Length: 455
Image (cartoon, rainbow, N blue to C red; front, side, top):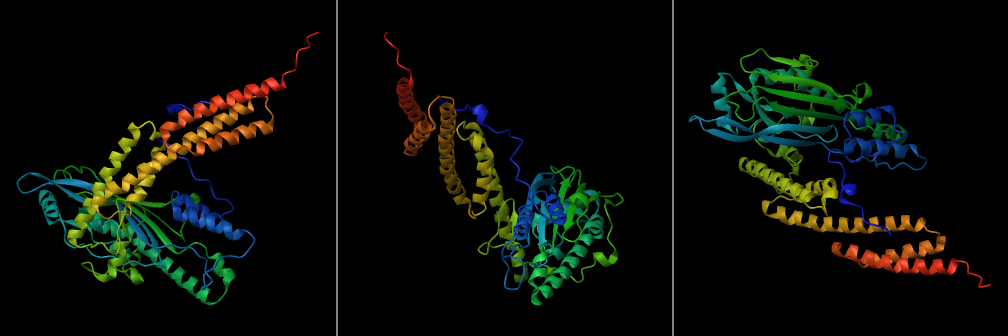
């Protein structure tokens, strides 16, 4: 009779995840795009949309004649904690930017802002320790939607900040200008009423740019303030062979000659000209940058119109993100220690992050995660039922029963299990069903056996 699989057989490998199926019939440019963005959901949506448009039938177009592809500019940020010594030699901690991952859509401009002077003591003590000028370096440039908040700033030397502008940021601005020009061409095409040509313009005018700030000694910047800015970028019009990203590394080394790897930008490319609505709005958080702030996603948490991004608000924002991070760690340990839920580790963590994105108050974190416990129990209950029915079907196929009898018993077991709502009762109910089916099989076997001739 069927048996339940052991935990070892059910639990997936921790280092792997099932990959998404590759999209078919996509043109080479879109295939490169998907590879360049390392499986970005946006890129996959574009590839899938293109595949749909290749099939016969009507194309779904907007009133302007362009393909209906919903995209918007947004920036995902991650923060990191760094230490420094204050005037008394005591170690202090501050939260600064670590990663800015920006999807810049020319059809949806967002305006950035200059640094607003936060964390003055951190920058004062680092500069004093190395007798060098340190600035609040934007991970994402303020002229391309990067806001002057602590999660988009990292302390680097003035010269390294200039080198960032003359290399990766210069090319970023140039790519943005090209995409803005492409947008204007698409707008003219749409207004012309040529739906066929508009349909062919599937790739939106975008730039995908990612910056990671890596500190040599994050525990104490006043001892060693060296850091690297690792940048990578891909634009709709400039895909490299095999979908590779263009990369740069800018080295911030106080007291040393500035160095960087990657293509240098021309003076014209590095200028803040012809950037349209993306251009920085100067100091402070004016209403013109509210869209950028709402599109900021910090440590998995996304802002909304009801959240105040004042200086005090940013501290609350970062604190809330940290509390969510702690909650996720506790959840991971809880799942790993529970043999019943362990097999759903990856699905549960993904679902938890999705749930927490909608939580904007620390008091609601535990309530939100409590919903996940109900979901987990439902997943496990369904999995146990499916495992039993699968093994039952396998066992029935090994018998000599007729196909109709096999289907009848499988249907009987399915109906009996539907009433079970508690995980702990699945095994008990399965054993009861096993007994009933075993007796039925024995009776059927006796009927089909040839009768012995007494003579």
